[in-house]
Image (cartoon, rainbow, N blue to C red; front, side, top):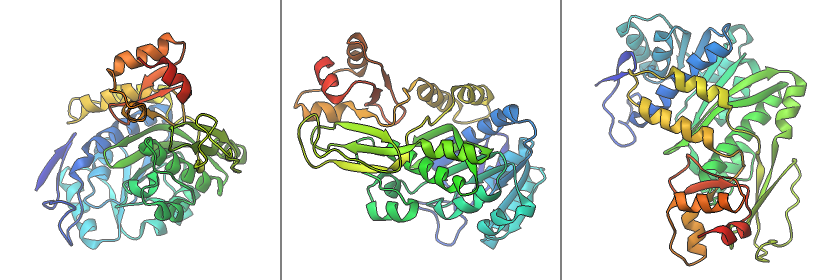
Length: 369
């Protein structure tokens, strides 16, 4: 079937459910992801004009790489599936744009210092974990990563999350943000092995994936700074109290200081730092255009992310009211009550009932209408 996204039209196999067995995979749910990728690449080109080369490391149909090539990037597309390689070449030719397509393993290309790229984009089927070390070994400027294995990232598949990311994840009411911060922590640790520091420019958790764009600084001190942004979250499943502290060593309290419960959970080391840069969000929003089918949704998402408080966990209002055995009030009234009580409070992009605040769970209870 033909699919038009932005300025390109590509041929992809008919998809049904998880895809057709044996066919090149194309995720119809990722148009927002790809629209934001084009806008973010435009924003990054304004930030770093010398960035020219772009690697679509696991290209499948090639739609992401073709869109980058059509937008002026010197694009290279890689896949180890010969059918995907053929399809990617056909889609470049169909759109009259130049680009190299390699039949190779992504890790082999990424590890080769002779073929370093300014921008590396990882959008594999499932976890990006097997590609992270090779990516940070030679990527120059920007690394873009999609992770669709949200159950391991968020702690729902605990053992898998520990194995893949070397981090203890926890399945909490802020599970989507847990996934964001587990992924960023794994990336920071991987980059630090090569004396590279990461700075997240844009990160979002949408539907069943996490997407992030991190700027690279090649120095040991920058790598140290990124590691310093790691730490642990302590969480009480009884009253939903939580606290965080920086450092690679966890020092969980013996009991919850709010309710006295002793079943505290520890997650980490996760990323405690900022997950985006406001100036980059502004530039990405400005780079959206009317050809993008999800432009309006993308702009709204960026607006919400920009207005989020910079806190490492968020709350679910309905979960809190459920604990209190009370009906939830309108979110706007709820947030207004927190602000009237002297606290900061904002919606988050993680869901319609999620919010961030600098109030403790006890202070939220006192202020809530």
